[in-house]
Amino acid sequence: MSRASRLLDLMQLLRRHRAPIPGAALAEELGISIRTLYRDIATLQAQGADIQGEPGLGYVLRPGFTLPPLMFSVDEIEALVLGSRWVAVRGDARLAAAAKDAVAKIRAVLPSELRESIDASTLTVPTFDAEPIAVDASVIRAAIRKEQKLRLTYRDQDGAATTRTIWPLLIGFFEKVQVLAAWCELRQDYRAFRLDRIQSVEPKDERYPRRRAVLIKEWRARQNLPATAGN
Image 1 (cartoon, rainbow, N blue to C red):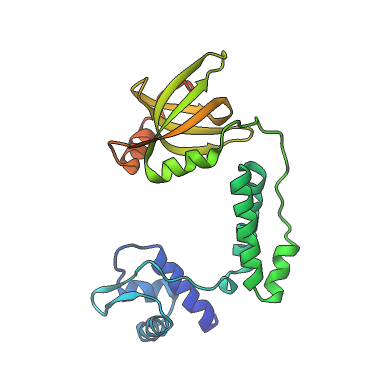
Image 2 (image 1 turned 180 degrees about the vertical axis):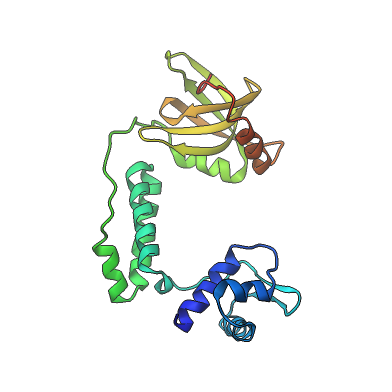
């Protein structure tokens, strides 16, 4: 293994852990001596990586340091390109544009041999006919990030419309539809709303009374219970 590859593997290993990892455990997983590990950590620190710790206490990588895209492997590049193409096909217009821009930025800084991996990718995503969405999905995504309530008009499978105030949690992408998981104040329970059945959406100047992470954990725990989308 080259030294550059070893340094990349060390960075990836540190990224996987939020708590300090003992030097001996790092060295064992990387298959190197503890002396080599100390030298590699010093090298990364000199390059700007905020690795904190010392022998006997363990090491942790603080957020904020990123390696240049040229350090991606061919498999990693293909994974990124495939994911971006999937988003470009299945996401809304803003997400599709963001996916294409991300690939363009990565491509611009890659060396020529890796740049060819993007241009000649062997992986593709088929097009399909999705249910049209009338509202701007980016408004919903922004509310999720801000933990902000939404007021929406929703049409159920029978065509009946209701007005709801919800706490949006996440959007699931299925084969032909996108589904919003949320807490519904009208039903006082978790509900799923198909985005193609949302007729209007308006952000409210009000945050959830509970943290989104806690709500998602609670929602996941209830997934074994039967539920009807948008009831």
